[in-house]
Length: 92
Image (cartoon, rainbow, N blue to C red; front, side):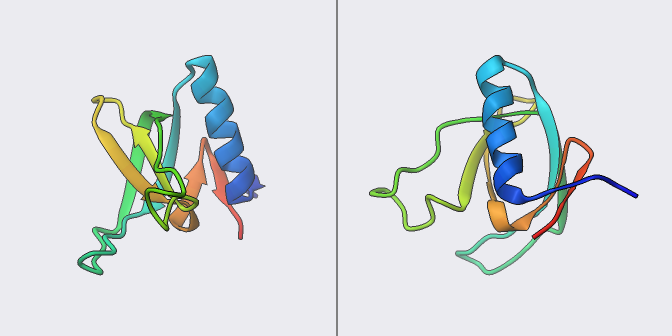
């Protein structure tokens, strides 16, 4: 049986690892809210979090999470669409 973690604990651990300079991997379902489209599952290796929007900048600031991938590309994912983190299955 695969170990599980809830999305908020996973995000907390991502923040801790980022602060320590340790990269992590995760998987999520992509979603573009402007076009209401998805490119399916995405797997990110060697990621670290980056500054996200503040609550006065976006109404999605609590669910839209900024990260940098292994190629130093700035990207975003929606926390409710997080599926895996460092081998842990995300449970609701």
